[in-house]
Image (cartoon, rainbow, N blue to C red; front, side, top):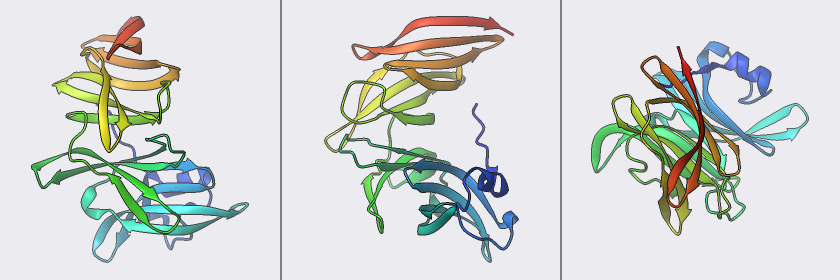
Length: 232
């Protein structure tokens, strides 16, 4: 299973100077995840305060070389955010903020991974899509434009059963998401990435066997282009 790594703030400051401004102590604040788009950095931050730890979405704007200014901060404490990406989901050339959270909903009392898709106009945050369910039970996602259709696509690792997973591709249509294609069921998928137009490479494990496969979308399915078998 994938392990979410929380990067220490001191490490992230080296990568993205001035991300969250000055702090009294680096131990009081850690970065859960972050994404960059243009002159902005979008970060999920865990911050220690008088009442304990709270999670925030923090947006910083580069105002001059080496200097960032915090322009937005919102409490995400009840949502348990763990991943953030920036993408143009509907092809309107406006970037959406995509945040993976782990929470219940009014219609589902079980805590699961869910997506919040938001727009930011420079001052306010707006909900674009916060549906309770997408891609069944999923463990990870990635947004990227790798198909010749409007907008970026959402790629999910969907859990089918214990240690059995598949890749699912969704795209934006009108006011929500539509399943475009799904792969066969594989063992535990530990890595996946887009390697070209209509090409996704995945790494899966089943017992002592490791396989690296290249998949493509074809007529509503994800089919294998090639695979490499590695026995451990």
